[in-house]
Length: 193
Figure 1 (cartoon, rainbow, N blue to C red):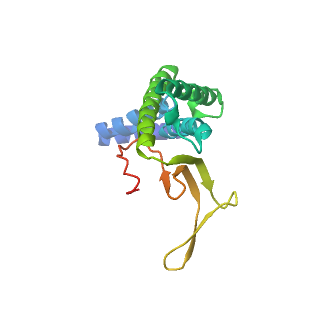
Figure 2: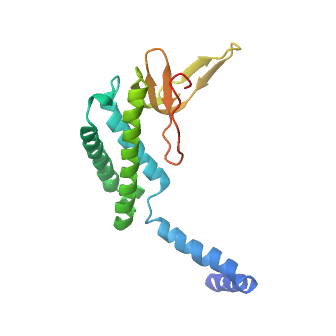
Figure 3: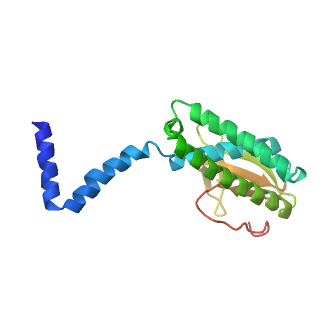
């Protein structure tokens, strides 16, 4: 009886508006099935963040500009491959269920983004003088007992919780970076930051 009711409901929807039925019942159902084969934006972001964290951590307190771009690219690629392999082998990860052909295309897209980041980072470190990375994926939350407490100019106190992708400092000033993959951004001068 339940199946018959669904069919009648579907027929009624089709009779009322065939195009709407097609869009809502057919195309959305196909899209939901196909979504399992695609790399989700959150997963792509996690791969990029983990790669950048693992790549930058050995350089905390120093600069990458002492290395050649060829060596840095090779190092970044090794880190990226390790992160991708771990994500694909994690049975609980949705990355593991991405269609192999789609994964190869997405992996190349992510790699091109990382290469662009490396070129930008290298040039940025040359321009920014004394600024060096000090922390990556820095967690300041009440969960780990390290909220960030600030006193505002009016004397009131606030505590901030969250995570910062990266903090650079020249010893006197700090620059906080929040990595995004969807926007183009022109870096301000250190004075304007």
